[in-house]
Length: 344
Image (cartoon, rainbow, N blue to C red; front, side):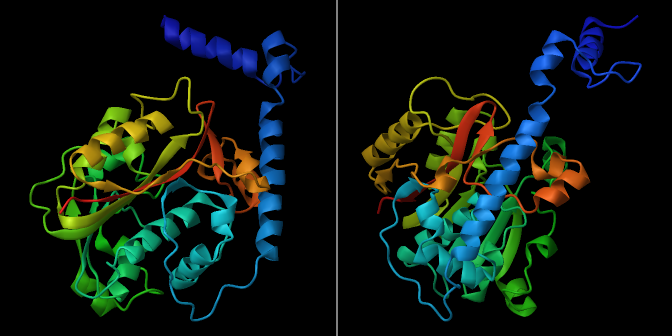
């Protein structure tokens, strides 16, 4: 006999099927509501991505031999104005990637700008990356003489959480090596790898000048665990060290949010509360800017399915994903960065 849950899944599949057993349109009332949802999602994506591509083509060419400058980076959300700024263009050129309207470009530039402004982009500095995956920052930092420790979950634990299947986990330093950014000898000399659970940072990680993570702290199990990580990330740092992190942020300041789940969404109240706690301990938290932006790409909200979940034909037609905001469990989320300087 079927279990109740199996029967319910079978019943729901029948209700949502596009056609019945004879190939005719399914006219069930529930299907009348939902059968066009996938097409609506694809339409939204197509127009949003096309807008982003057109805006990107209108941007001036990336500067040659530009010099990083101080912009007074604060704790803030990703915005279209940032993507179009000189500082994002500079770091994209340094990483040898195009400037496109995508949150990941903003995250990379945000972390590098924070490291630069706090004086740690220098030979001899030591950096610690949490949940690094295959991101290019370790290779780029090593090219500037910075010693980097790359950390990620144990491989089997990462596989169980789905990070391996979506290419978001680094199992060996080979995956963290980006030859366009650094010579192999320099990388091998300055970059090492450690297994580290962000919920239980090993005491053996010590004496770093700075640490960072990019959209990793929302995957630690709960909002409380994510906020605890912000505080614990200061322990491996020397006095005065820098801690810079980006996270998934629910733009609604009031009302419910996602908690106790595989991806949680932080809100303004959570960041203000942890900042107050950290400041009471003598640490510095960069001023908050909660402006979400008012330009077209600030208003575009991308929707599931995501690129890696789509049929190949749909993914190819839509092209490279481009978005600053997206829908997660029915909420509008964007990337938010926070900058903390350890007391001392």
